[in-house]
Length: 284
Image 1 (cartoon, rainbow, N blue to C red):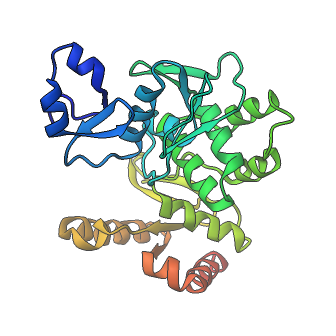
Image 2: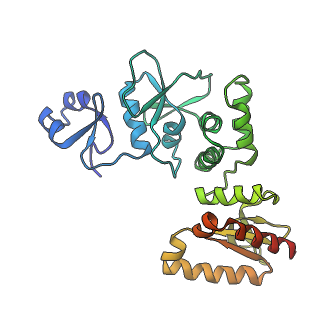
Image 3: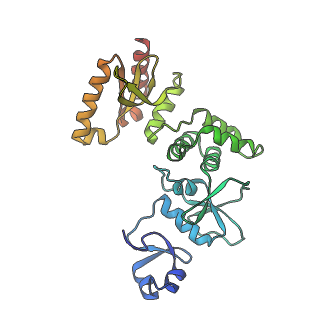
């Protein structure tokens, strides 16, 4: 990656001598009015947020998915950039302008852009998106920023009349910063919907010597049952797969039951997963 690989204002780059007008036309693509990116670079959520911030020219606050991206949230998709902007000019395609009000303490500065805080960002996403999507993204925001659901509840208390508060509360009831992937979130939601007690996430299994032997995606310590979601690397990486087998053997030798989950099992045969977990818990 080199200079000007992130989106930038074209007039600034030319005025600063970073590029000529000819180079701007030849080597870069126009993303938004006066915002460019090098040809061949596909913008991710953070790139779209940066581009929107440059388009607003200091008169906007990055919110929602754009704020989440700037805060370091992983696993975001191709959602459009979002911001609150002062002024009446119409936003170009690819930018959603919100009309929400922000209170003191609900913004911060990242890379020179004004962005909503982690708690405010989770507040906005949690009350707007469909339930499963909202939980998945709120989990990711909490995980990336180490923010607690209680901090989001505090923001909600300051906006009692905001739209979607009831939906947000449902999301926060199950949100968990311990989820380390969207599939872990979906696995946890499936277990909760099946009526199982809420599992502990990133459960540390400690040996007799006091050292941590393994860290499981989720589980129930009292029952000594854990559920592990195996992503693609667990199947394609030979060393990872070998370690998974060894770790499972070690954990099971300590009296734990391990239920493994694959993408195929989660998506195509969720009832099988539910029955395996039910059997594991019943056996305890």
